[in-house]
Image 1 (cartoon, helix red, strand yellow):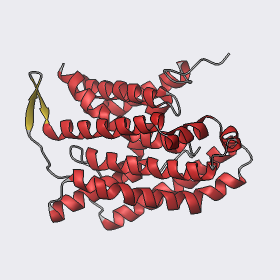
Image 2 (tube, rainbow, N blue to C red):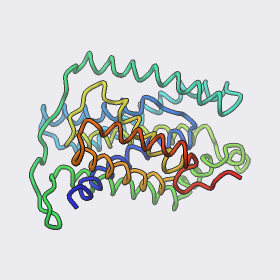
Image 3 (tube, rainbow, N blue to C red):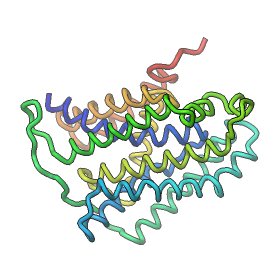
Image 4 (cartoon, rainbow, N blue to C red):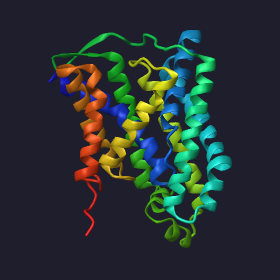
Length: 287
């Protein structure tokens, strides 16, 4: 039961991070390999704010979100939109965006190393709490609750607002969305920027209980990709279920076997999904 509770608490943050990349890939058609670095930037902002001004990471998230939104909008507008407009097919866009964001990830790592080259961690709400008769860390519980609130709000917005409907329409078919009057470029830019903001907020939350460093972003990018592929590209419901599975499996492996094998377990899940369920948990099998 300890493993299940700990895995569920971890999965909330994983789901939030995956939702950010899902918006960028599922809507804007950008496979952003620098997604993990945006998470680390959010965590670094929380670390600075807490260690220099004793500002709660939860308040830092309110500042990091609009800054990350603006930064990702500029990245899309000036770096990625030209790639979108010149691409003759979705396959070409995916290749170009992978190359562009792969290089951008190295640039961001270099910038973070030059600013703060060491591991960064801090103690925030690191107190034990009894939950259902089991002991959990308060910072993990708080991060989970905030991730659930943000993820729930995002899910409601996507499914019960005009803007959210436009985003989902572009995700399904860009040409049809354009024919009904939706500005596809504007919606794609908004989705990419929103995805970056959600990921940065996830970084501020996860930094409260995980030690981060500039080069760890690639690990979170991989985990977000696993969740997206397992849940189905553009499927928010699938991302949530996949995040729960990954969080529980990683916790079980770390507790029962060895903490160093959690990435191995994640990779095995990734391969299994690619081989046996490439359309995702809730996707329809190709006929």
